[in-house]
Length: 351
Image (cartoon, rainbow, N blue to C red; front, side):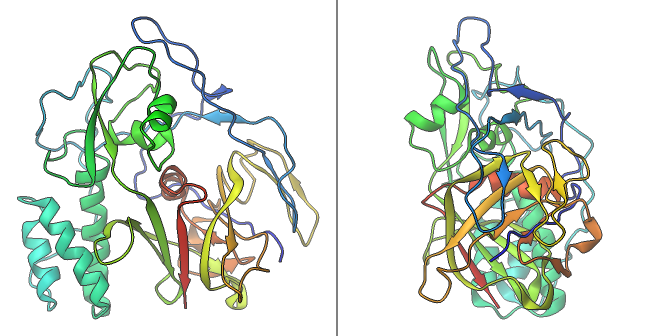
């Protein structure tokens, strides 16, 4: 199958940092913490029906501002965090939804966001929300992602997060590796509101995720739901709008992240026209992030060249305009890139 391309500009967070590129990953920092260099980000080129061409790649710092919330753990250092941005203005969900779990989740969103998220997950799992309720649930999910997963001041009782104390010689990449975290180092940066991933210090408390992230794409809803862990105990952490392939071109079934296929600022060649787009080209239809996927079932093992990526066409989200890939707004796909890992993460694409 042909590589799909087509992409968008950032949406839900609208707080993406500067487009600075640090060659080879994180540079060294001042004492007392010696920061190890980040590993290469992998190949950049995306070729139709072939593995990406192995070329050197430059990584980009993801600088994300985090919405303020009441501080729960005063031991988590704040000296390297971003300044609190203006409060976001999502479409606020209203209480009184017909679904009991959703109604209670909305009521508890401010006072007990962890319980609110549990009830919201259960409401999604029941798959009985009306169209209006589903829109309320999407808005609440975005609010809870900002107040829990991506908030350095989030409540300490969150079971999906634990606290790590920075040791001498640590870097974010080294912490992810030695702690066996199933995420990219950029997620740790975002979770802790670090404006500069190099500026961590010995003794600093960092929030890190517990478990493995998985995605579920529901084509009929044009939605990608991001979960932490699998099965009955999984936790919904994000619900993001997507664009899909024309004429039903996005395949269905169970997929996983393809080995060595997570790319930053990838090159791309349009499989139909042959037009080539270099890395860092603002006109590159697939945007800044590419996550290649491969089928793991008998019915989709031959579905090659598909992926999850960004887009420079934000109006294509919620529509069938790609060549078959799942496309997201730029800031949304950055979150997916930071959470899905190879080969642990799965992507279930449902009709």
